[in-house]
Length: 221
Ligand SMILES: Nc1ncnc2c1ncn2[C@@H]1O[C@H](COP(=O)(O)OP(=O)(O)OP(=O)(O)O)[C@@H](O)[C@H]1O
Ligand SMILES: Cc1cn([C@H]2C[C@H](O)[C@@H](COP(=O)(O)O)O2)c(=O)[nH]c1=O
Image (cartoon, rainbow, N blue to C red):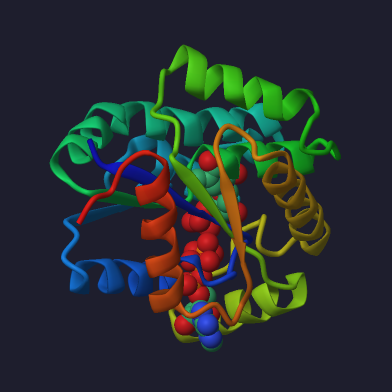
């Protein structure tokens, strides 16, 4: 059974870039690695509806905090069997966003912290009711809100298919989401967390994580 590792952080933090670096380093070290990014745009109708809602479609869907969270959660529920198969077939499965994204953004939209009712609602929905696999490690890519916003803006300018959505345009939401992520990491919500900064070296991080998991539960190579 492979190790389930999740990269979390704000919009534009650099999760996709860091994930690519980690995967490259682990593969170079001989690990069999698969990756998946949530929301699964183009694969999941729930993910696509969510993205469209954040760009003004589907009436008042985006204004409902729980409706949005349910769309993202249903995307993961549909992915659960495939995820279990990936875990059976790989040493490491790396996810770019997972359940903690729903916990952080839902709590932040409600102006709650990391131990409030929104986080508990997400935990009960996704880990208990939907029985999604619990991560072995959650990695918070913690970058200043201003830097993440700058990166999200410059990516939107250079990539015409990646315009900023309603959450990315809401600097207050991003700041509160960052605080909830900090809370979740401090509380070690659901599993062990590590925090990496904007200058993290993917190769060094990859080595530290595989050592950490080796001493804990899995990942032998
Ligand atoms: N370490 C870095 N140094 C400089 N630029 C970076 C770094 N990491 C990411 N970027 C740039 O910042 C932008 C956002 O990065 P990326 O797509 O990896 O973020 P993300 O966290 O996956 O975003 P989102 O969650 O919004 O999809 C991209 O244009 C990327 O090239
Ligand atoms: C998976 C997931 C995402 N969100 C939020 C985070 C982003 O602001 C948007 C879209 O995600 P992307 O990474 O920018 O494509 O949705 C969320 O609130 N809950 C989730 O589970």
